[in-house]
Amino acid sequence: MKLTLPSGETVHLTPAMIRSLEQATLFPGSTDAWRPSLLTATTEADLIRWGLVAPETTGLPVLTARGMLVRDRLTASEAPETSEEPAGPGRATIDPALGPESTRRLASALNGRRPDGRPAWAVEHREGPGTAALALYTAAWCLLLWAVVPSMTVPLGLAVGTVSVAAVGTASLLGERRLRKEAEDDPERLVTGLADHHVTGDRLDAPAADLLGRAQRSVDAVLGSPLHGEGLLLDTARNRVVLTDTEWSLAQDLLRQTRTRERIASVPAEGARSREAADRARRALAEDVDRTAERVRVLERYAATVRAAEIEERERRTARELEGIAAETAGHGPPDDGLDALVRAQELALRLAAEGGGAA
Image (tube, rainbow, N blue to C red; front, side):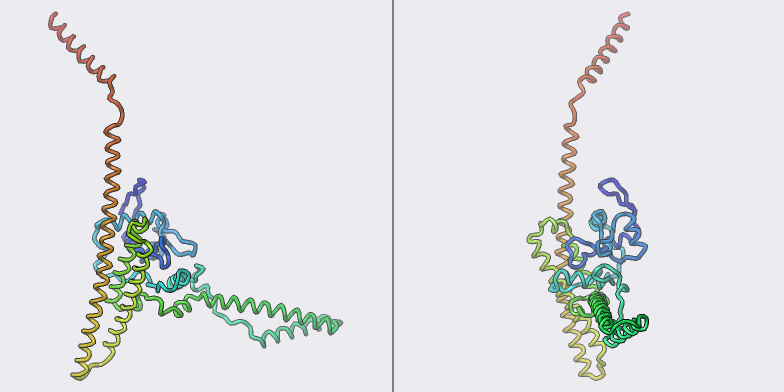
């Protein structure tokens, strides 16, 4: 697909690039960094080659200003969906109570990276030397010095030993500190330690994942709207707080419903009473799911209203621009009086010549 930008440049998009841009999601904890979805190495390379994606300071790929412009053009079009299958969540839903820094660290860990942007495998798991090992090392070092320098006095030997112990102890302390920092930045430990503060698609079954994906896309559509960025959607801060809190509440409900479905399916219902109890449990779960689905539909209606307002605003701006062009074109330049006079003179000369020829 070829897409012409307002600057006149043409961007060539593959179906994979289009899906990645259309399903881009806000990076958790950020207000303007959008992460392309469904990224493969080839798709990421294509997006970078066309200037649509660039790595941020942490090394994670995010949409550039040009990429955001292309995404807006794609999502504003009325093209049919690329897939009829329900799409699950494109990112993790993180507890907003964690705060910006913890959210950023957890989001990096969920993406398989340390908080400093390095990949997960950069974390080295190893234990530092123990106290006994340090004592043996120091004693061996002192004995070696006495063997090499037999004339060394006892005070000098003790001084060398003390310096050796201090040096080795300091190095060991720094090493232990570094190992503790590495352990704190270990993505696996971060994700495990904050398991109650995030929900990802792999923790949900298919119905719950579908609902969370719909909720996320609606929230991202509103928070990523130019109208929201320009403060035209009432209270911008309140909008963000309410939507992120609603998404987190929905994610918790959907995780609970997934576990309930698993529990119902795992309990054998062999007798009449147990089957009746299972039916009641399923009905209660269905009512709970219906309430959750209705909340998701409310989000979708809100997102649809915002998208309609975006289209109307773009239409107004386009109309104003075209009206300005029309006004400039209609009033451009004075009439060419000299040319008109020349044409009239030529017509008169031709008539006179014709009359003179007739008279002769």
